[in-house]
Image (cartoon, rainbow, N blue to C red; front, side):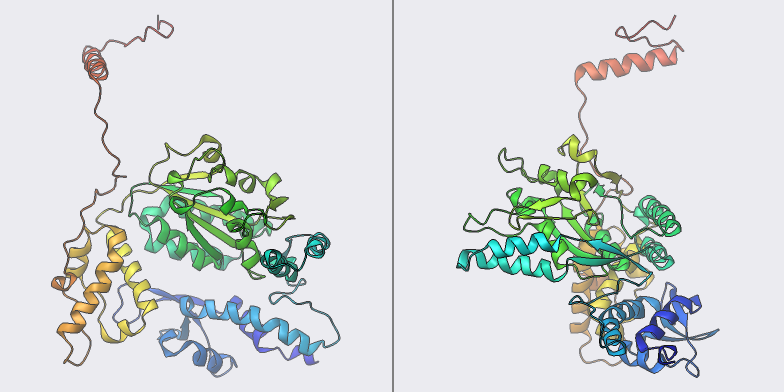
Length: 466
């Protein structure tokens, strides 16, 4: 009967799955939020959630009391994964649940991921000496040995809703988010693990590619790592370097897997892949080939570790301004998506999204400043998305200094923005125009003349149309 008295983590998980969800417009906000309804009289977790997440997450709706999903769900997920193992040990003290923290193997919401062969890792560790040169490698292998088996979440409706919520803040990524939703819908139907296609986001600088990748990773609960190819000098920084080198270390790819806790899918964001080093001996881009191909990723060997690990669940999102410099063998393994510049009509959603991030990082802003009004939104419409964050951050500082002796909420004014917004090309990638050669220009004029005469243009290099 003791199992019938649900533990707190179980009650949280049940409520998270079954509670009614509605759309709600908070007072003073310009965009609706999604809340999950709760009955304080009958639900024992109400006081617990309120105490952990604060009153700002609680809203009185027309259908009763509810909690803001964006504020409550991340905490619930972390709490459930952290505490469930300890509660299970308390219920079954004689059962060995292993060292790893995270979901248990019998949890139907997850699938087992055999990261490495623990016997192989143990053999490598035993072969190392006690010298100072081997100590770093030994510590890394021991971290891997602590979690040779991880759990990967299966796709649920919450993951799809999370992507749809991200899409509201990134309207210029609409086609991509639609593709992701369709892909996740099929995986949910088949009961498959949460993964994304390996993506390449390319387009003009400052269109929000890195911000989108980070927001998507946060929304889906990925274990996120990032790096820039422009700062990556050699391929062994990705795949690991031999301990014979003085500055040897584990590669970025293996480190993302080792550091990922059980229950979270690792994701790597690689910025500026079009600026990757093509140095003949240690190219940084082609070092990815074995990790991007499922067959070779299953037996990936980091040179620093000296043992095989399964990289197949590792997700990649790359960003580039142009794709002409990216090698064809890399492009063929990625789903390429061109990111356009937001239009003027789409910019308010982008501005609200960045302002919401800023207010989340510094909760006091919402307590002292009113929501952004139309005058400020209009002023920021022509600002490049990359510059929006620092523009708003500075504007709040200016407004606070000018109203230091006043009480009540401060309204941000257009003059508080301070700097002239950066101009951008609306709805285009902003790629440089190529000046046609005289021969190309003559050919174009000839073709236009033939079209006006309603004659068929025949290319001498092709078969005659007659």
